[in-house]
Image (tube, rainbow, N blue to C red):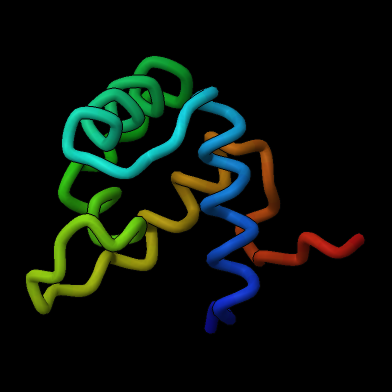
Length: 83
């Protein structure tokens, strides 16, 4: 299970990798495209919007989404960022 600290660390890494804040639909779509181009894994803009709090549609992201995002951010998917 991911802690709030783990999620914040992941979000910060995604922002750094993309090189801009992720706070609207356009940025989420841009990140989705960049993830696909660099990892060949598809993460929808809606999944990214959920992660960054841009939408609250009552749905949860599939656990694989976190793995794909960590892969893109060159982070361990087990969220062991403190090593």
